[in-house]
Image (tube, rainbow, N blue to C red; front, side):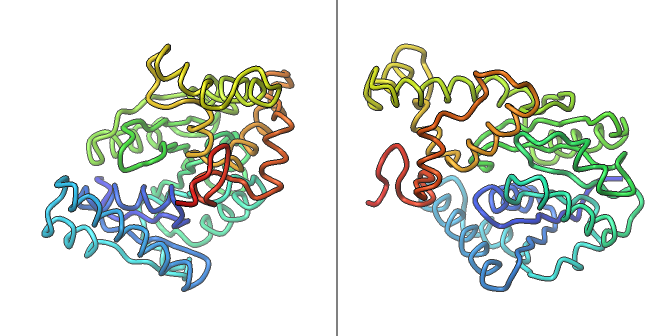
Length: 286
């Protein structure tokens, strides 16, 4: 059965992007936020994104309006009852995620509905065990910005059924037009397992005074062909997200390369989260 009704829990940068991608593909989407104010903010976020696409000539006005017509922004989680796929895109906190999946398990009615997490580092087995249907829980890890980045990691826990993983991958590839890779369930999956130690080492290099932030980033852009440097990328991802991923990776593997650099901890404590707060390794106030 094709997936035509999707729910996205969390209307922040990632959740709004995931919802927009689904609605552009012709899918009926409900975006849930914890209150009406945040739901309205999520709607504004998507609307502005679509307006930018129109201004750049990537979308016409008719397609913009059609995309918005397929979306609802709500604060009532019980509206997820009829969804065929629910994608969680909330804060990277295991306790909060598992509480949400416990609630979704009791709300989403269809036996064959898929409960997916956009977690970037938390093992899916821990999330799935909060439900009575761990075979229907899968990782569906989009990358920021979801409207641009082509990749989706499909994460199989030891309990995820082959039917769930295959159906999720088919939706991501055929309906959303994403590039799909499959990975087993371990902290960091494929991308963050490789990417995060690289970013952490760049932070340590900057913290030690070995090189300036500008030179570190310029070296990787111009010497390694990366589209942006590691410190710029950390600011884009969110330094709070980087810190949460470090905690998951270090807990799983216990290796020093996965430990969060002290500077990253201090920056998060100071609210220097990157682009979303206007200041991180760089200043985005303007």
